[in-house]
Length: 237
Image 1 (tube, rainbow, N blue to C red):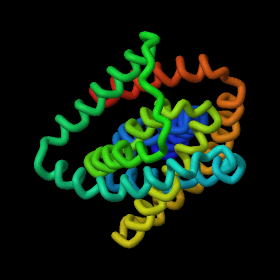
Image 2: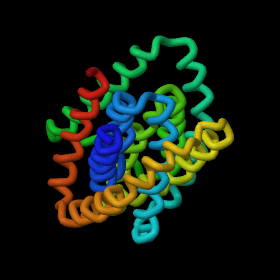
Image 3: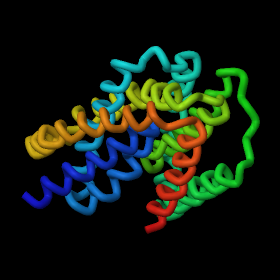
């Protein structure tokens, strides 16, 4: 009972973050779910939740998706994943986790300083950013940060930022979901917990959509910077 309650609460918070900013649910949920449920249950459970969040947001906001960029991000990510898996085998996992944490904190602080990165005009820049995202995704399931940087450099507005990230996360999340099913990772417990969490997930998506819609561009950028720093700190804990 305690595990179920904690799981529902964790997924609510993670979904609220993702529905507001477009990303961050995995970075919030995975460390906490792993402590509560163990990695073998947490990983396939969140693989069900991620595409659910993306699908619901895309149903109502697909018109804001930058499709020219997202399909390139997806293709490049798929090419980078094997490199990340190889790196996971060769490098200590703690090095990878801490390196990602440092990058998130550094970029968040950089944004708070008021400095701006150059604007990317061409959607073809999605290819190198997507490849790096694939490398990080294959290494530690953290393909979001490079895509967030890319979205900022493309100057996506808050609604387009959130929608385009879901256009990227949905197909990549489905791939992970299918691989877990084929690998025999789905259990009755996972679907039971998923069902218990669904009402909170839908509520968090609605609340996050409201927050995203009512944040000004300046407020969105400020809170996004703080989120990046916070997630980076979490990876060091």
